[in-house]
Length: 171
Image (tube, rainbow, N blue to C red):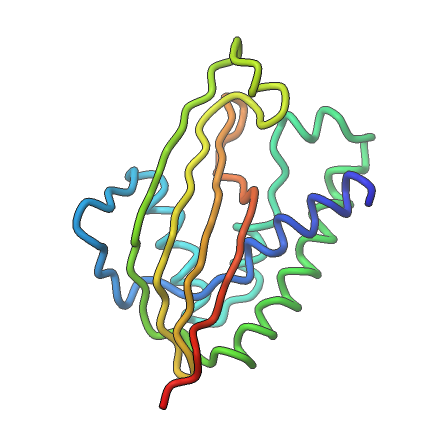
């Protein structure tokens, strides 16, 4: 898989998550950095209001480090692929899980990778934040995971990874 396609899939997956604003009942000890909380609020508010364009905007971002590795039109190509993937995934989540109701942060782990760390070559310098969420939808509940990053030249969070696992059918 080429670089733009790989990033489109990863970032597109990240954007398929559910909506916020409504129910924020974090687990005790699940502290979320303020700027990360603002990103979650914006994302989930857009999802709740079914504003696909806003969700796509939040998820279709390419880090400055990756943009430097791509040809001139590469970053925009990646963003376009991410937008398409995000729209498709949002539709699948709505069909399978239903309308978003609420979420709770189960855990949040932040790692800062300095430029001189060998991992900076693979993951990129900066902040990497993994957030595990319990989400409620009208049809099913789910567990969702975001990995957000923000490098020194990135103004906004970049969605590095996203996954959702639905819980068993309600009886």
